[in-house]
Image (cartoon, rainbow, N blue to C red):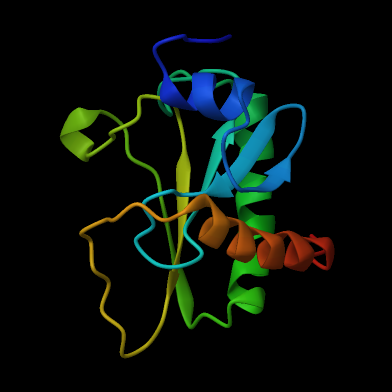
Length: 141
């Protein structure tokens, strides 16, 4: 499934215009280009599903295992004190891109999150992505 109007389908799944930390036939994970915190990763199904209500059960389960693996790598690699893992469904719930995705956001004690987002350069994102990719190699589930 593909939706030409969806930026994740068009720019991420097809053009691969992102700093990737993980790729498989069904799942992609990449650095958010407007991160809330350095190391903010998005995990998506390669195929288009709008939200949790229409995602295929098997893809959902596979995606959640990838989220866990990346979360462990982010926590260990970036030495975080914790993580926010979130997923929004519908515009009223602050879903901006209508393609199912999960946010993994590093958190640190004594550092407040600035929810105002600014675009990061692909070069800066790729530096952090390389660290996380390396960290994923050591994660065993």
